[in-house]
Length: 345
Image (cartoon, rainbow, N blue to C red; front, side):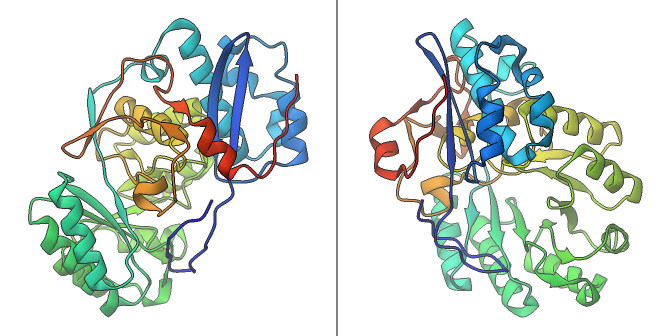
């Protein structure tokens, strides 16, 4: 899928996706993940034939243990969608019940320049979004210009989060650097440095900017190490990195036990993961907005692969009462983008 994105480490022009469909009779559950399939994944997928989908993530054991978590996740989403459809239950009910009926969203800006970032922030603020995320690049002067433009567009009451994708060298990080980012209007810095947990811990508390970790928080053991090191103010539960929806819930619970909020920091890309993670954010991650919207909205993809994405009103997603994910796969769009099809049955 073509994308228009820019990170501190480069600007990929395409992302590969895997779309998963699981059938039981005439019902179908769908899932997505941001990686191509592997031969091992295809073998594991065949093990689901004849299984009882009501076991949900319990089915992703045994031969699945050696499958990377970012490949398992698409099957977890599809299982929840399938069972939700079979019993006319929304995904958020299967996950334990929503704690809010709407979820504030946080679009992501991939700036081409500080001026572009400010203009895009103005557009999004006018649409009712009160929280914005922006990519930064490890150049303090340039990054503060970007953040200042976003803050000006959003206003004093808005929330600004910057994701450096570890673009700053740890040796360059200092309380003075954080103070400059704070003065520019930053609330939270995500994956700021290419450094250790001890180096992150030393940055905490030195300014009003909160430290969020994503790359170092992609497993329950990883989160345990972050908590032990007191290295983060917030943990990001990133799509395509949770292994399953139930694992995401468990990671949120682990962080919450130590009074560290874990937020849903993104929503997938093709519209399928988007719906899953927006509903997950109604169940967990209540300390902040639901992150990037992905797809055509954030990443410049030419189209999403679902019909009628979940409705957005005044910068919030409105939680659906419809079964499963609440979205349908757009077969026409899928055919335009599909490069390979594999099936077992």
